[in-house]
Length: 114
Image 1 (cartoon, rainbow, N blue to C red):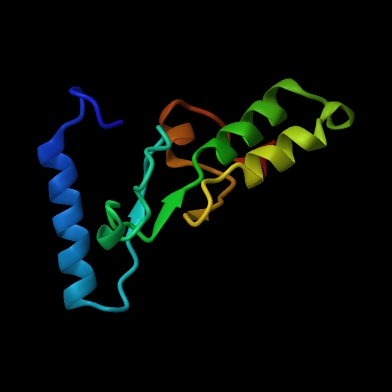
Image 2 (tube, one colour):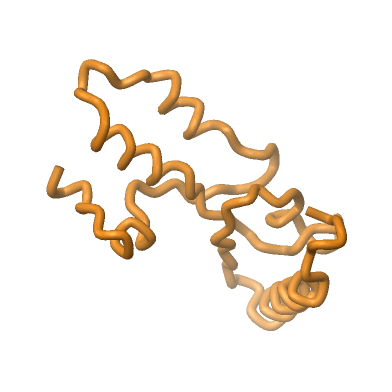
């Protein structure tokens, strides 16, 4: 995350954008769509974070589609579902959702049609 491959200029831009938005619009909420689990993404800039308020829990819709495509109802492993829902970095708020626009891009059905 913090090696030579990081686009530092982009990271600083995101920090500045979050700082500006939160300064100009105190009630604003910023949401990161990010899949790597980058530490500090949703921590305040004062703590060395990037300043987003929430991250999308992108593993959650992927899990639902995988379960619906590959498993019968009686074969669902509840612990796998629970783990995916609770496996979050302490102190970072996450938005959980069931479907992703990414799934629509690859031609998956919506959950309503399963």
